[in-house]
Length: 223
Image 1 (cartoon, one colour):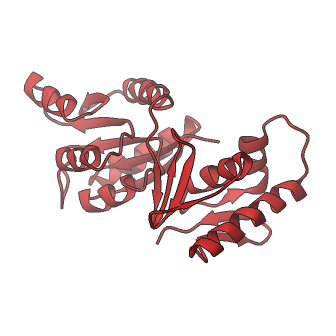
Image 2 (image 1 turned 180 degrees about the vertical axis):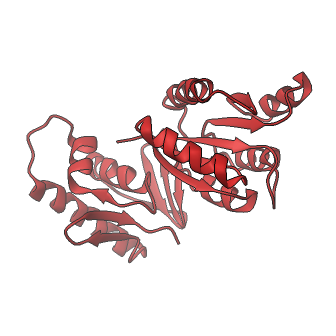
């Protein structure tokens, strides 16, 4: 699966440029322009990294980062700022940023910091939260509205792969590669396990969370 990156910058030209550039680096990119929307998206835990500008409407980048960390969301964050003082960089790093790039910046420098943050994030990924669904990858546990759900290891992997890209379509072949890798399984096997997971979600009260987009793939819908 491509790493999923949230780009947050209120300057549309910079945001669009980063969306195109990072997509060219093989990343799935979602762009937003304000701090409130960024925090709401980041707290789902469905992104692998954030590129977060400091100066934002609604909430500053520092406040977004502070509230993320307070909520237990440890998604790697690379800060962007027009201010390049040592104090500014120290503030961001003290709040839990994984990198800091000053504007104007060289794209290759940002990509290098982002890829390094993504590598570190692989070893420290927090839980995925989508509405009432919480997937604790460290404990291999799933709950819906604080009630535990019993899933087999394979069912857990299927749900984590889909919820990890909440709001985005996941094609059947992509799911097959991520969950089964090089194992020789058919698309029918994928459908079977998605069915198992859907039935358990419905039984837990999460009817409609996991959707099938006929002819295309699957979607965990963000409430």
